[in-house]
Amino acid sequence: MQTFLTSAAITQWAEAHRAAGRTVGLVPTMGFLHAGHVSLMTRLRAEVDALAVSIFVNPLQFAPGEDLAVYPRDPEGDAAKCAAAGVDALFVPEDFYPEDFSTSVGVSGLTAGLCGASRPTHFGGVTTVVARLFGVTRCDVACFGEKDFQQLMVIRRMVRDLALPVRIVPGPLVRDADGVALSSRNKYLSAAERERARSLHQALFAIRDAVSSGERSVARLLELGRGHIDCDRLDYLELVDSETLRPAERVDRPARALGAAFYGKTRLIDNVGVGPELSWT
Amino acid sequence: MQTFLTSAAITQWAEAHRAAGRTVGLVPTMGFLHAGHVSLMTRLRAEVDALAVSIFVNPLQFAPGEDLAVYPRDPEGDAAKCAAAGVDALFVPEDFYPEDFSTSVGVSGLTAGLCGASRPTHFGGVTTVVARLFGVTRCDVACFGEKDFQQLMVIRRMVRDLALPVRIVPGPLVRDADGVALSSRNKYLSAAERERARSLHQALFAIRDAVSSGERSVARLLELGRGHIDCDRLDYLELVDSETLRPAERVDRPARALGAAFYGKTRLIDNVGVGPELSWT
Image (cartoon, rainbow over all chains, first blue to last red; front, side, top):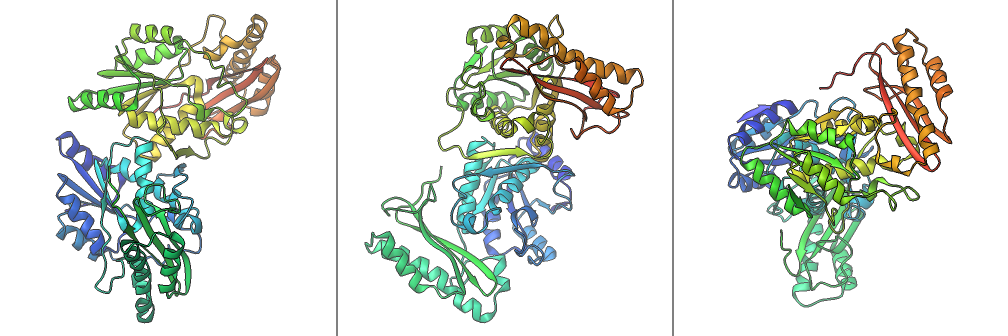
């Protein structure tokens, strides 16, 4: 595995592979890697000739007061996990954005609700960094986890709208033994908070199971879910159409139950597919 | 010359060329082509294997009340000019933006002044359409005229910031026999307006020539220029640093004199290099 510290160096690596007819894959991350990230690498490893992982804690997607300064880091552990997953290129940029960086990429509509409602500048930072990561790594394929379901749909829309030459592959959410979705931010949780954090996926599973059992009222499903959640502050619990991310009115087409909740100061998100499966094209 | 009406069709054309190792060039236009456009085609024809021209009057870059509805069109004349210039692919999209198009690309800073001040939504429309045109045509090189100098610098910045795999080539401004910069909008001018429109380039030339003769005061240069202009409304006359597009404080580094003025309802723009030449990298 080679490690690259500059955009120019990883671009050169990628262009050499492309010139030789080899495909390039990218798993973009913010580091502090866990089994969820590794599953994305494993997924792409089987699909591409040359696999890159980027580790960059992107300031643009954090608002003032969020956890940018304390976001957990583990450069040595990350490198070991990437090497073990068969990654060819580890991109850990020191100065990712060029001087006087002044371009932004945004997606409207899909970013209005859910995480976008409480973090209004977040997705603009995500689409901007991802657009530049796609450019810098010249990737043919990129893998994003369903853990960040709204992000996945936003990036898919950006790629379609700008006709970017990148195929977006979704990777399934990975849960810990207690059912909590893997997240770098789980590290912030106390033992007691971790115990209560289980209520988030339990609420989402309850909604999914009730739909399987025939419940069709979105209002009753959300009430059922809210009854399960034990948190310090609920940001949102919603049932949305999987394609439009607008509140679901019916559950006879692919829907997604999503929640965001605070345990202490830690904001966790989770989601689960409900009803018919979303077809990914 | 082949003509393509859909994004999918031109992408397929471009990907076939790229797969065969051939380079693709793009000249993006809004049609009603004149010798300025043709000079960009001729320039790129010598540099690439496969040359595409797009003709699309992009609604996103017109504000309400501007001339979108009456923008001049000449599809048959345009096709003849492209064929004569050796264009391989003419892209005249019928539905350029996909349904629920929701992505925007913007550049801050460089777009704040000059045309951006009086047309605050213009450059966002330009960068968005150009980003999608680059994606759809998979171009390796694209040529933009110096007539739209601010646009050229904005697109160059977007390409650098997003690390797009496209080289931007500038094409010199082309003037008519009377010195007026070629523009599709010149068609709107009455004979009397056309006569007065010569004052715009005359003002810019006067500034350039005064610098050559040793004048170094930006205030005196602009006063000199304003003295030449005979128009119905002056939008701006400025002398800016060629790289930053901020008001020039000195003329010992590459600067640009730019003007925008109304003749009747027609808004014309023009510009000229002043002082040392801008190095293009």
